[in-house]
Length: 307
Image 1 (cartoon, rainbow, N blue to C red):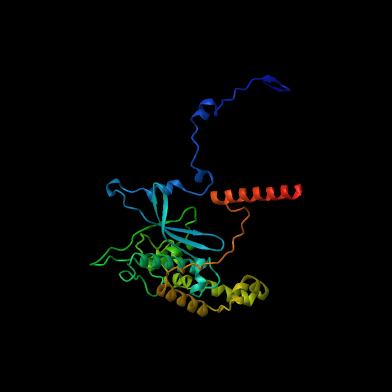
Image 2 (image 1 turned 30 degrees about the vertical axis):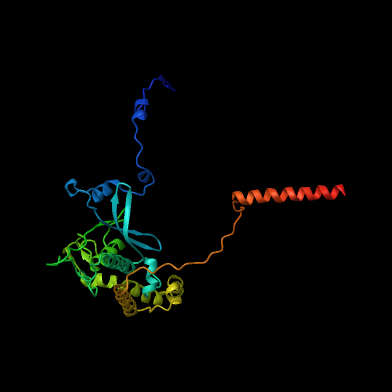
């Protein structure tokens, strides 16, 4: 009952979430509740046709954080996802890229690294070499007339934004140029013109070799030297060339080094001295000997007191 200066009246409010609602409420999957997995997309990426029996459906999983680009080749089982190969942009300093590990050029290198690493493990690296020198042009791997077919997988972007020029597509381009068969178009690469429906190859190539970073370096150095030193301090510290040509030379060398040796180095064994906080467990013989020693000590003490 609600009262006003004009009088009182009764309002009926329909109870939407009643007992029947809560009895039938179904909790969403944990990773959906945490906002980590798009199950609408995952279902379509993972589900395999029944007449293909237990054939895995492979995915190129690309995830980008503030500092690192992660690329993995994954397939799903009832027990969980299995990773066939993985590459991280934090590995790029081994190949000459010491900073800028989360930009478009680093994403391309990481995609190239995971592709070459996988093909080496499957012994397909000589059959499918991909693009030896990046040009930015559209490329799709073709099946050889003899021998095994190319390794096919699908891009998994997760919850990442798929806007034009996204670094996710830099990793995709690197993997395709590395020799993997991934269905894709050119509509999301940097340099694509939505009106003419064409890709500007020169613009895309510039991004692959870090030219956009080099251009901004040169611009910022001329405009504000203090901001330049602050923003590109890691480049200055590592002695990276600050020109467009210098960046291109660095990434070209990195691509060649990745193709020459994509294998992950073996982890170094560390000799660690572990401190023990509990006593070691004794066996039966040791326990009996301890009791015997206590008895002898007690007997000797009693004999000393008697004297």
